[in-house]
Image (cartoon, rainbow, N blue to C red):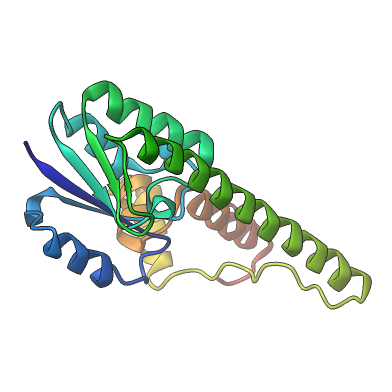
Length: 197
């Protein structure tokens, strides 16, 4: 039996130390701690979790700090737990004190997942209302424009010359795919009209 610990934070800047301490407290070996730094709404956008789900097997145990670190909505949560159950994997969420080897644990997991989803929906609703009010009062500025990272010109040129791939530029400059292609489009448009980046 192997015990795994899954850690997720929403951005590369966020600290994982608190969750790593929890993993240590539960005697999880460092090679079995999976750390993901991404604000993904579903499992498709979380390669570390996808990899972990393919590695974990019958008799293993998966510990998370809280269900909000494991799944971002009730549907994903229940699907992931069902996958773990089908594999014969025990799931433990420390914050909510959930253990899926018991019927009570499974029930509590469903309840907590639904409550977490409801809270996220409320937050979105309040944000939308706040934006609508700000727009009415002409105070809403929208998102800040994306700035070009340092050395953008250098790597863009290398990419266009074919000495480096776009995927490598994204990795080096730590850009998400959508952000990268927005910058490329903006940069090329600026080049056409003679605006410097």
